[in-house]
Image (cartoon, rainbow, N blue to C red; front, side, top):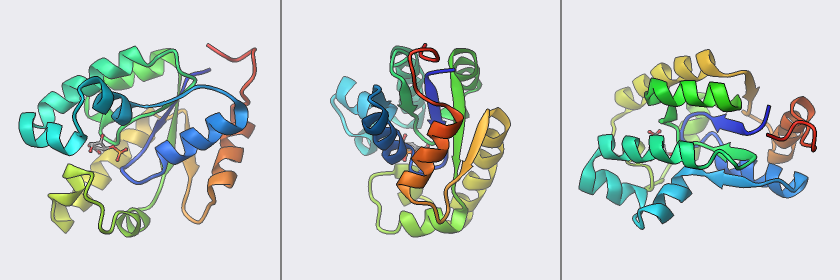
Length: 171
Ligand code: S3P
C-alpha cells in the first residue's frame, strides 16, 4: 500500500499535504522537485531554461526510482507525462490524486514565478494542459481526494482514514 504517491496539477497541494501528513503520522516524506533541485544543485526554472523540459523529465523519471523508500512522495505535476512513471508508481505503491478545480488552481498560482510551464503559458494553453493532465491523473489514480474548500487538516484526515499509516501497511 505504501508509499503513497501524491499526484495532481501544479498548486493542488501535494507538497503541503504530504509534509503535513508525515509530521502528523511520523513517517518519511519527500518532494521530488526538492530532491531534483538538491541532486542537480539547480532550481527548477533554471533547469528548464538551461536544458529544456525534456531534460527535466529525464531527471524526474530517474528521481522517482530513487525515492521509493520514503513513505509519502509528492510528485511534480508533470510526472504523468511519461507513461513509464505511471507504470512505476502503480507497481510500487498507491497513487492518490489531489483534485483541485482549474478555477482554484488559477487563483492559487496568481503571481507564482517558480513554475515555468505556468508562468510562460497563455490562458488557453494552461486550460488545455489542465484538461489533458486531469484525464491522466484520473485514469491512473487509486483514489481521488477533492481539495476545493477543504483545509489541509481535512485533506490529511481523509488520506489517513483511507490509508492509515502503521507498521502493517508500510512497504
Ligand atoms: C511541473 C510541475 C512542478 C515542477 C515543474 C513542472 C509540471 O511541480 O515539477 O515546474 O509539469 O506540471 P508542482 O506540481 O509541484 O508545481
